[in-house]
Image 1: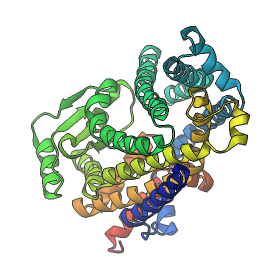
Image 2: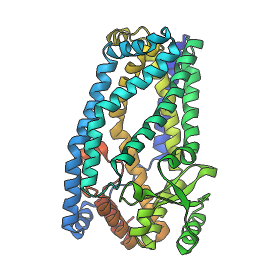
Image 3: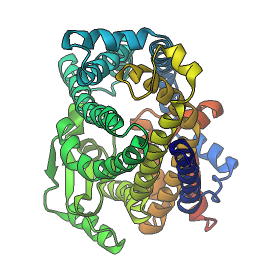
Image 4: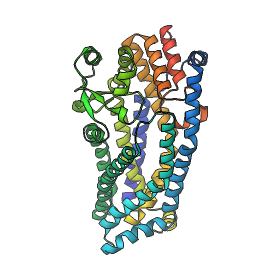
Length: 418
């Protein structure tokens, strides 16, 4: 039995486990609310606000699709031609072709090329957000956030690249086994540390002041059997006018986070409804499910990368000898980009099902479908959502049920039908 055989077996087992986890943990059986209720909800929303949301998304469509296509094109040009390999070789040449320099500097340059290529489209998108009043950032703060994101990506990328190519050099035949375990472990670790290490880089979090709302939220979490470490307020208004709240972290790092914009715009009952939805994710272990699927997917990707090394035609196309050489960085990125695009509709389908279950949880916990429906409408109109999107775009890109689906579900619940 060769290492390639065991890698193929491991990949098949991981794929099977992903299917089992998705089948068991994702609520596939619940259908959306009746279309008649959705259309009724649409008619009850302010027509001018609905049109403004549609106009906003129409304005975003061209920069968003252009960025997606341009990013894909850059990845394919760099990865499926010798150009990417030559760039990595060139940046490592002053260091004698040292593999560490190739991995770190080459990885940074390849990432930077993609960022620079799509930067004008990111500026265009930010301009649209400002034109519609959704962004409150200055160009200075926007640039700082962009730099922070790139710096975090560079640090995480450096860790991953050093581990990938370093272990591959140490164990040429079995690196996939060690790295599969390491990739899965890294995903799990990040689920714990991101809330406490990464989120504060972009927002300031302060404890919600003592009072009736804080007491109500902590009491609701306790009744729901979802212990939380704290209730925090994020200074989201420094970046956006959008409304939101979420529950982040696992175990000892779990906390409720409420946007300051939500506290300013929504009555307490609607804030509770939003948090009840987020508690539904924690109650059902959705973060744990996502972490498990991410860990399994990361391990499977490593196995697939190992098997990809036998595709000599692809390696020749990219101008590399092995996927374990840093010169194959661009090739691996191109494959990952393609795989991500192919998987996107399925990932979003899973997400919509999970979000719909969290909506139902909010209805059960609050037992106030009128407030939940009102909250759905407020969030959508304030956040300039397309409340009833084009079906193809919805299936491809929507991670949440549409606004009219959510409002219709609340109406069905009020009638005792859900």
